[in-house]
Each structure stands twice: as C-alpha cells, then as structure tokens.
Image (cartoon, rainbow, N blue to C red; front, side, top):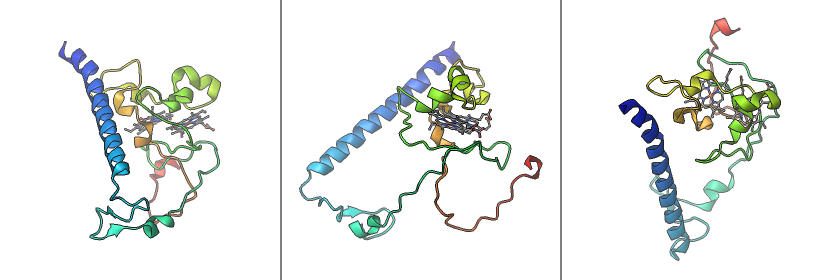
Length: 166
Ligand code: HEC
Ligand code: HEC
C-alpha cells in the first residue's frame, strides 16, 4: 500500500516543486524588470564567480554553436553511456505536460518515425517497479542525452573508449 502511495505522490510533489520554483523565477525577473535601478545593459548584475559585476562586454562575444547535421546513431564509448542525440533538438521542448522527444521515441510512435524506442530501463522506478510509462526520473531526457554541435573541445581529451565496443 505504501509503495503505491509513493509512486503516485512523489512525481506529483516534484512537479509541484518545479512549478513553484518556475513561478518564483518569473516573479523575480518581473521584479528585476520593474526595478529602475537595474540598467537594461546588465551592467549592475553581480557575478557569483568574481568580485566585479558582469558587463555587457563579457557576454557580447558569446558564440552560438550550430547543431551537427542529423545523422545515424553515434558510436558509444562505454556500455552504460546515454547515447548522444544524433539530430537537432531545436524547438523540442519538454514541459510538465508535453514531451516532444516522446512524439517520436515513444514505443507507439517509433515504427512510423524511425526513431529508436526509448530504452526499457526508462520504465523502471527507483524501487525497481516496472511502469507503463517512462519513469519520472527519466522524463527530462536532456539531463542525460545531449545533442552535438560544432563547438571545439575546450581541453585536450585522452579518453579511450572501452575496447569491447570496437
Ligand atoms: C521528429 C522525430 C524525433 C524527435 C522529436 C526526437 N527524435 Fe531522437 N531520433 C529520431 C530518429 C529518427 C533517430 C534515429 C536516427 C537513425 O537511426 O538514423 C533518433 C535518435 C536519437 C538518439 C540516438 C539513439 C541511439 O541508439 O544512439 C537519441 C539519444 C535521441 N534520438 C534522443 C532524443 C531526445 C532526447 C529528443 C528530445 C529532445 C529527441 N530524440 C527527439 C527522431 C526524433
Ligand atoms: C537519468 C539519465 C537518463 C534520462 C533522464 C533519459 N535517458 Fe535515455 N538512456 C540513458 C542511458 C544510460 C541509456 C543507455 C542504457 C540504457 O538503455 O539504459 C539510455 C538509452 C536510451 C535510448 C537508446 C535505447 C536503445 O535501444 O539503444 C534512447 C532512444 C533513449 N535513451 C531515449 C530517451 C528519451 C526519449 C528520454 C526522455 C523521455 C530519456 N532517454 C531519458 C539515460 C537516460
């Protein structure tokens, strides 16, 4: 009985927390926008990283990276790796009520869309119960699956993939 209660209440509690924090964010930004002491160029925004404030010059050079062209699945480097997303995700939103990824990756859609069916392991909750839907802990796909862009690696990487996979 307790297990059943857990399964129902936990995701809901989490979603409520998310909704509340989203609401608070909206409130904070609304207040900031109304505050006449905050210049529009962001000059007065304090950075957590340094003593100084973040000026417009610090963000103007931000590069916008392009998604790699859509392609076949990318090689995996180790068995347990969340596979990389081999396609653009522009406009693919995941919200409390709607998950664009599941539009193609759901078991009911995979045949017609050609997408890989969402992994079996994603239907298991923390207690090991098998669910009929993707478990809440696997709902936000981009916590683990990331798309690829044309960004250059920031540091040299000497990682060697697990040999059994090659
Ligand atoms: C319009 C349909 C569509 C949508 C929406 C979509 N995908 Fe895909 N996805 C595909 C297709 C098709 C493939 C397989 C490409 C192939 O096999 O050539 C794929 C492949 C993948 C793979 C690689 C699987 C593997 O075995 O390597 C991952 C991971 C993935 N998608 C994640 C996502 C995530 C996360 C989202 C949401 C942000 C998403 N997809 C949204 C169609 C879609
Ligand atoms: C907490 C991390 C995590 C989240 C969140 C997550 N995945 Fe995964 N996913 C993985 C891992 C790890 C694998 C590879 C091992 C496995 O299958 O469990 C995987 C595998 C996959 C595969 C490949 C399945 C196959 O047959 O090879 C697809 C497709 C996929 N996930 C789609 C999704 C979609 C769509 C979502 C969102 C609804 C999602 N994943 C959410 C970690 C995650």
